[in-house]
Amino acid sequence: MDLPVENVQTYPRPSALEPVPNRIRALFAGVCVADSVSALRVLETHHAPTYYLPRADVLAQLTPSPGGSFCEWKGRAQYWDLGAGSETAQSATWSYPSPSDRFAQLKDHVAIYAGKMEACFVAEVRVIPQPGDFYGGWMTANVQGQIKGAPGTHHC
Image (cartoon, rainbow, N blue to C red; front, side, top):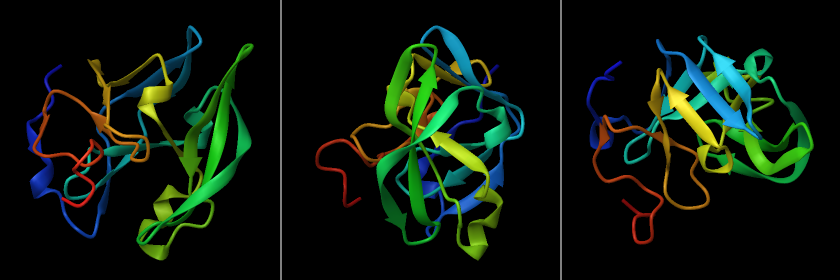
């Protein structure tokens, strides 16, 4: 399946939330740990899309992880370790337990760092993790433009 071409420079700021018309999957420790046809995504200028799956569609054990972060639009994020079998990916997911009113739909949704998984997919297109160690966007071949995360791009 071909995804439409998108350019991150055309994404809005402040960020926008929209439903995802495609199946979203994540694989870890040899198993499917997330599978959703009801995901949402956040789009923000110079960021790869960030996908949020309903918690019910995350098929792995989530355990609270220390730390957190704050987004000026979404609110305070809680991080989670993801466990599958005897394997654990530390701080591999995050959620917004009490998101801002504008992003209220993110309550009970979880985002996954693609770089901490074996593979992630949008439709059947394999995801490339957003560069860097902070942003959790999912890049696919159809996403173009200068994306934050790599050295020298934090202030695009």
